[in-house]
Length: 113
Length: 111
Image 1 (cartoon, each protein chain N blue to C red):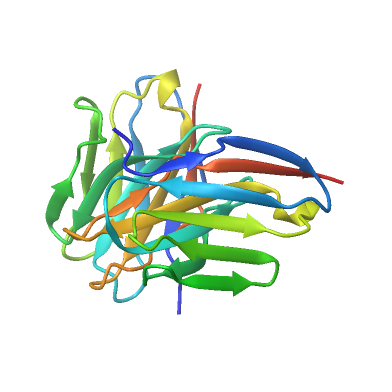
Image 2 (image 1 turned 60 degrees about the vertical axis):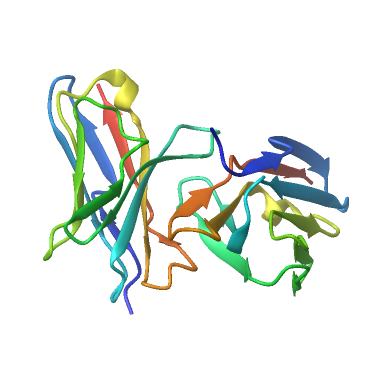
């Protein structure tokens, strides 16, 4: 009974490169949330997706950031042309249809050098 | 606008002291959860409360859901250094199907 899997755990990118963060939800879960966290801070909501649908992307920057959750495969958070300010921990959480409890992955720590 | 506000934002106490963390909103929630996050890890679910006025105990932790289901509290008795972490509340609104997270309370328990 695998939990939420995120990879990679650590990602280093040079300024201007692209970062792709993957999240495989718990088995049977069809809702995925992405959050960003800076050191010593709480979680900042980015985007909420169901399979093949973006439900709420009000927390996503308008440029360079995109997310998808295809019918098959993991959810992907994509950051194009990364800048130093994108360095943070990115967490995803998944919930089932009942949506009563969210389970988190261990996060991807992105460092832009 | 943050839907769930937690207070205090930071808390540093001595081992053995008691503390309470609050999670408040003007919205009604069908359920509310508390999570703890340790450095370098993802948040881990501690408890879910669903009924107004509900009280749940988890060893030295007591969770309460407000009667109107708009707020919740987490009380820790005789805090220990192992309780150190970021505590997050989260909930699903009564209308709709989306999770919302609180601002977080960073707790440090000094030995």
